[in-house]
Image 1 (cartoon, rainbow, N blue to C red):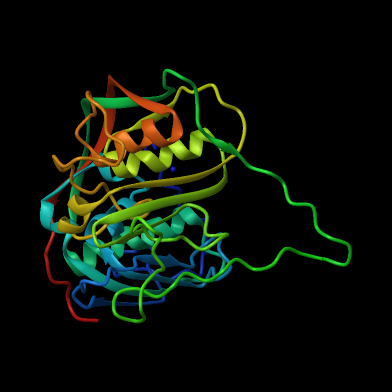
Image 2: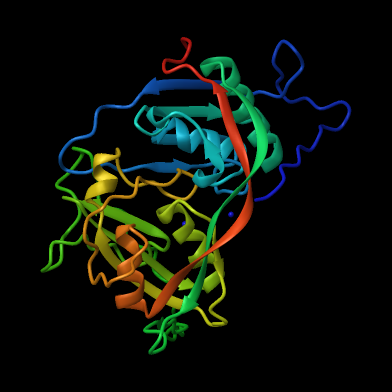
Length: 312
């Protein structure tokens, strides 16, 4: 804002990558520090760098919860993680130097080994029957804005860079708010979610329905499967009540696990909502609906993890 079986790919013979004492792949260097406590002005969770990014040699994660670190390490979503609730509230600043030419699979192994070494993480895998959702078109049809491809003007070699995210968490005045008190997401920030004073806005540009369903899975804490039949790309702007997410320690980006569901009233809610604030907003604002089904979900179960990491 992407997971069934986990396949761990081995290293080729003669690899020069760093390894732990027992021969497991590791970062060249890694630092884990407690994150500052959240303020009433909001919190910004950011993950940058790593294989496939513009900075493949340096991984950073600000205000990362242990939930987010574990789900990223094992390439799963939050609903696939069975763990103590405090993993969502303990937050850290992580910086890791990645060996040259490491792959995404190797990076995940390094992160797994870092969690095992510094937090004494121990897990096992199992499959569980669980509720899943299908994203379908609601009665009355979709209310989606189809994306328009911008044609560069004469003399334009490239589109303007997207506006930077406004600073949060005490490092600035926070995001701008619209007339209803919802954060205004800067243009070009696709797949971004902002929360301020218990109100959230989820914003995406040029997004297909499969990706949007995947994004929703992080918010409702269940697998969401695209069954809309819609083939286009859309600009999506969704506002909803996030007071429960704030009480749970803040909303999570993709990979960060689901916020807790709260029995409050979502923006535009209707009878029969699934009990998650974003659900009513999806139907009233986008003309889409989540339908509950049963399915098998592969789960990572945390058997042991420490709250405080060993020293850097």
